[in-house]
Image 1 (spheres, helix red, strand yellow):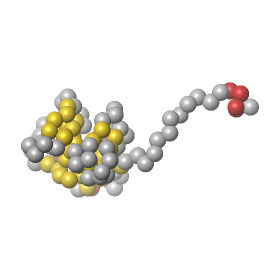
Image 2 (tube, helix red, strand yellow):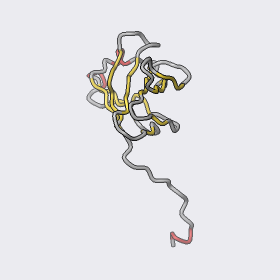
Image 3 (tube, helix red, strand yellow):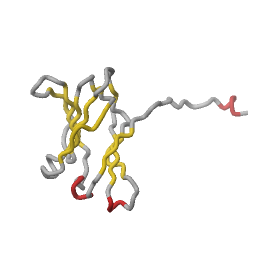
Image 4 (spheres, helix red, strand yellow):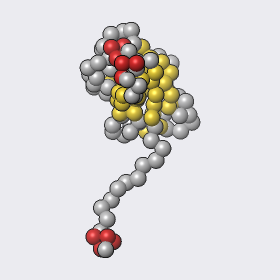
Length: 123
């Protein structure tokens, strides 16, 4: 179960970030997980702020630090030895600039590989 456990909107555009933690007992695949930002300036319509691409696994008790700016994603360990994934949202507007009041995670509950259907089945 991936949860937002911290948000830093005061450290400037290159250090601003969202800290996520896998608080479940199974690995979590980040692919397709979206971070949704809500702010008064968005006229009540939540904005998709970031969608994780690629297949990155977060181990139980592992962390993900999603920075606002631009950078190269990497894997590391925290001071207490927990695995952490560092990723970048590649955003030009910071959460503070948007006036974000609430963040949500949207986690895909299911995926289905779409395959071409043979023409014979369409008749």
